[in-house]
Image 1 (cartoon, rainbow, N blue to C red):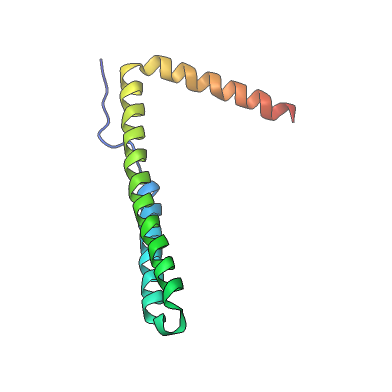
Image 2: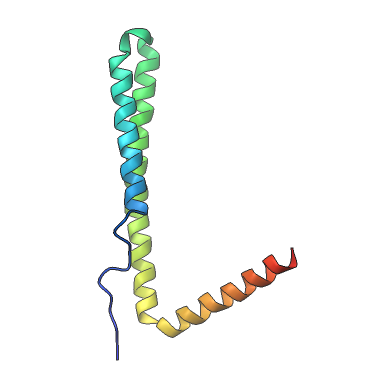
Length: 102
């Protein structure tokens, strides 16, 4: 008997909420820079905007990589459910032992 879950993530945020917050922060920073353009030298303004654009691309890349990683882990866990539980339990025991010694 196999059990499948359609959605193993929470609706209240997590990774997507964090990326949305970062994108919103980038947009607000761009707006601030464009509105205060007369106070900044052109070189500094263009450099900041360029870095913000790189940050946008990095966020998009991180989002894609995270989603691909989650999908890969999901497939492995679905294919080997009992082994996954065993590995997680073993990791918990090892981590508990290490933390208990300190």
